[in-house]
Length: 385
Picture 1 (cartoon, rainbow, N blue to C red):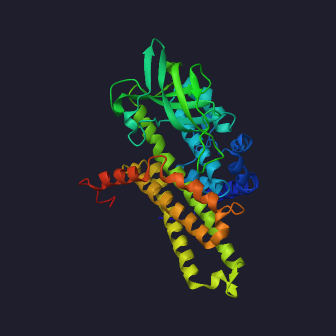
Picture 2 (tube, rainbow, N blue to C red; picture 1 turned 180 degrees about the vertical axis):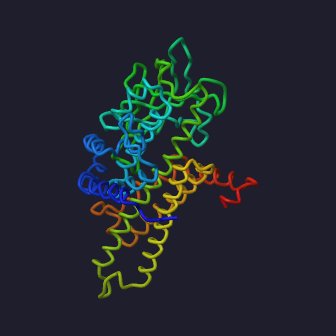
Picture 3 (spheres, rainbow, N blue to C red; picture 1 turned 90 degrees about the vertical axis):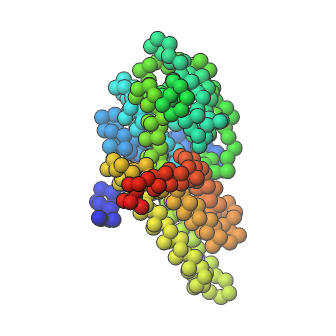
């Protein structure tokens, strides 16, 4: 058991850190304030392979492990949480098409997605199917060599600016086994987009509802077989949960770094804040929880890479723990800044706003607890426990 990064992983982290410091961190506050989607930066990220990290090499991806990807996402999130979070969603879309699409579909979409020339969105959530995703109502009706899609999705990251939508739609009866997945051209006739949502955070990426009204999709665009869509969606989310957890860890590290420096810079009662034991204890707890969260994320990523039987439970544990810790660390860092932490001159309030949604999306943390509890209650759960 070796907790040290290998030489390649150190190089990946260094490259991602340099990109974040040059291309993301100097602009993150402006992107947030003006709600700008930095497509040009995403393309430059694609030039370095960041848009197809764990997609296979035969479609232009880097073919890295989920552990490698989590290390990269952590570093990128230190530059801009919101933009990195979109990059993780895009990576999930690229991987899903590459893993489950026909060769025609793979070659049509994945090389451009991996290069950052085209962008992807993941379409699962509906107005009445959030945590109960298997209750979705969007329907895909087979007509010859096409499917006709009707329905709507909400809270779709990148919608209106992306080029391909991975859409889960019902092709059969009720429940999970009646759902199929499709790679849909985002500009196809019959697709319309709602207004850009005004959000608490994640402002550097657009979020919109998507409506499908008689959208015709070739049968060759289906991912996997009919009825496999929900399982495919959940496989995507195992990785997606690690990804958003890594974003929380990276943001928390950035907040911690700022707080540490501030404790040395700020003086009250004639001495540095860093000399007050109560604040030292606070910083110690932040560091301890952050290190624990990072190790849990990397453990879950390793379990996913290894195809471990309990990989879904480990991904759920990591997502729940790391996103809760990330938010707490960001909140405590803001507290250490006092009033300065609450104003936009400093990034602390943005860190807090951006990490808050991580406890909701990719499966809420309450759903993560359900996943873990169901596994822990099984008779053979001794190794997991």
